[in-house]
Image (cartoon, rainbow, N blue to C red; front, side, top):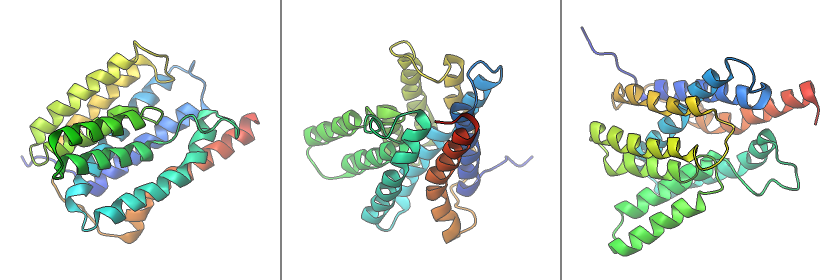
Length: 235
């Protein structure tokens, strides 16, 4: 029997669907609901898949600066919708920011690692990327995931082992500080492994609409969810 496969577009659509389920729970639903933790668990799929394709993008882009520029633009646009959704006021929304900044820092860390700098300079700059990611969604974990997927590019089993090692840090974080993500839901990050192992290395349908849609869906759906919450619950 032929082994099932998934292309890049299919995996990205899975990530978008999981992210939407996760954010509906986080923004609109009370944590006391019995299925809340299940929705958050499903949502843990998204970040690993996004980090994987940021690393893939590094090896497939024809213009790294333009690739970084796209991430920078959408990260900046997403800042206000993200902060409104996580509950910060207009005055206090500079404490944290969205995951696209984390992905950008992960891409920077991978570019540094693959560059020609002295190893000590590489270590310092990668550490700096992790430090800068601290106030961001998925913090240094996202940086390390992008780096792990990039370092072991083309070696799928080693990629998954490195990913799981960093994933264990994600579980450990729950012991250090309080989070809106229930502890059982955190195990959802490991559900990304079987999906990523099905990746066939192909993009799927080529479309400018899909390419930009993956970027702009993030701030657009956060804005819609915030407006729905505003309509349902007020300020």
